[in-house]
Length: 72
Image 1 (cartoon, rainbow, N blue to C red):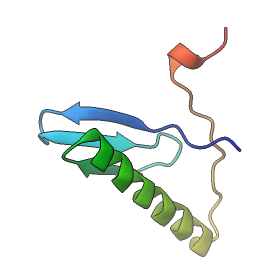
Image 2 (image 1 turned 135 degrees about the vertical axis):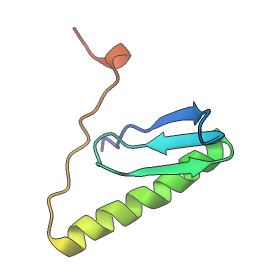
Image 3 (image 1 turned 135 degrees about the horizontal axis):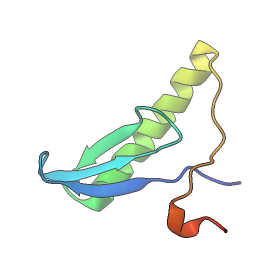
């Protein structure tokens, strides 16, 4: 099974790391380290998916791929 792509980047403004999942709008998390941001976004992903299921909203399939991984 494919899983969702996760971006992790350092935010000067927040002075920490942000992790987000492009396929799940608004699903992001903060951490002092990249590892902490990853751990937190995994929790956010589970909460996002549970909320969508509970509300009867569609859950998008994993589709996002950074340009460097896209076949030409």
